[in-house]
Amino acid sequence: MTPNTFPFKITEISDAVTVAEAAAREERFLRNLAWLEAHASEVYSHRGKIVCIAGQELFVGDTAQEVVARAKAAHPDDDGRFTRIVPKERGPRIYAH
Amino acid sequence: MRIDGLWMVCDDGIVRPVVRGEVRAENGTWIEASLLIDTGADRTVLSADVLDLLGLSRETPAERLEGVGGRADSVIVSTTLRLRRETGAMVSFEGRLAAFTDPAALDMSVLGRDLINLFPLVVARPQDVVCLLGPGHRCLIVTE
Image 1 (cartoon, each protein chain N blue to C red):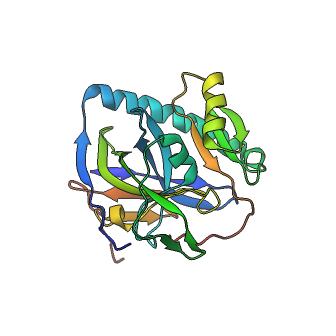
Image 2: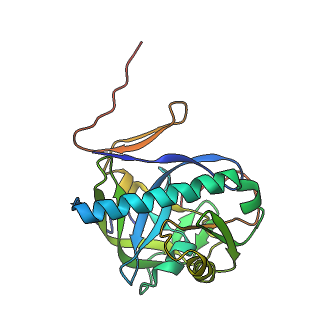
């Protein structure tokens, strides 16, 4: 692929409802992220799995859809949930894809 | 304009610079995607877990993505990526994004130079700063 093959249409959304919803979602995300950082060794012990943090709780599975379905069922109001792929092995990474 | 990122502890204990984004799913909801700031990446690429949650129709790319570890299967999705700026407003990038289909190919989505090049970027670990700058903000290097 060559750079700039896919141009983006850039807009700014500043209506009060969107901003408030996004702020609330980010607050919930940051709460879940803080929980992850406090429990990193437990979360990242699940090598080769997909994890989801929702409601400051860990869910582990083999696919994102499966793990998020369980997280949603347990914490339906937490839209600040997020998933992570836990690599099978630890080690220095060079991304550059 | 300023879009703040953060230094995030990853699975190997390494702290990496990321920007929190949201990607629009087929059903209109927003899926969280933390994007590693990767100035070595030509293109922004979503990881397979995020792709899995989007439920979007997938196009076959004309060319496969290639990285240090070799080539990996990828697809193209038409969607919107949103980043939150310092005022709380969302900056929205509507277009076509690449995504890996194999979770082993990439553990975290990356923000590549197709988007990074639109902004001055500050990544400074000692100062605990990760941010993309736009009109109204600038960085200044001072010789002391």
